[in-house]
Length: 266
Ligand code: NAP
Image 1 (cartoon, rainbow, N blue to C red):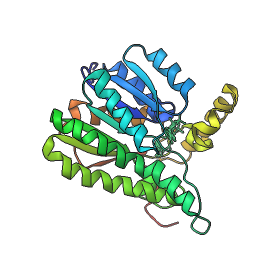
Image 2: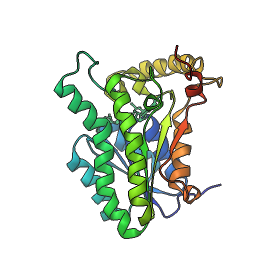
Image 3: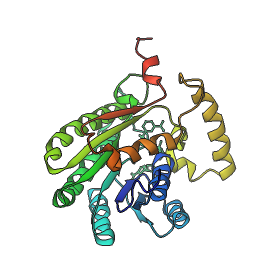
Image 4: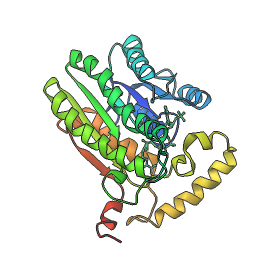
């Protein structure tokens, strides 16, 4: 099937790497016009150039409300509407239970939870006016099980999952669906420090890390392979397209069965 996003527009945060990058590729291939957001200007521009006229890169730091507001208004200015907001940007949190500082807390919550809160805040009025929209938040299996992510990362993602339910209830009557995707272990640079680290390593070093990661993740999932960014991109495509038009307030776990492996306390 193709053209599943024909006539639709999307803002994808964290579009410069991993899951967001794969989603931008899939959405454009399916006919969407997208704004790819992230802080890595070179990477974002390179991706937009590769995807062609239906992709625009815009620099944004999602821990800043103003940058998020600008992303939403750019979608409206350039495309005249906003059909999908994919609140996907994220990265490692800071601090442990006993070392966490006020600064670590604010950094982690602004990045992982504030980005979704403010994304929804600014997308909602535009989507209400249209009478439709799909908001997708990237949560995590760290929100469901222990031992799947850092301390504040897991706490913030649990909040993202519940935020999804509350906002889906509140916005549903306006034709706006709000859902989350909880990826399991997906092979992306987040495992070696996110794009901040990936940006300073050479291409060869990044590739070497990726190959090693794929092998180790394949051993940590019931299915005999690692999860790939595309696995999440296709879940996002389902939620963003009309095929997902009766799905609201849900957290879709895409983890190859990993959460089931962690049912029993170890
Ligand atoms: P990734 O390859 O490291 O990508 C992270 C993306 O987030 C990058 O595009 C990065 O762009 C962006 N980002 C980070 N901080 C940002 C900021 N302050 N402002 C704007 N953009 C920012 O990792 P990924 O695995 O694709 O992660 C995507 C999402 O999936 C995250 O929310 C992550 O928590 C979630 N997740 C991942 C996994 C996994 O196993 N990979 C599992 C569960 C959940 P710039 O550096 O260019 O800003």
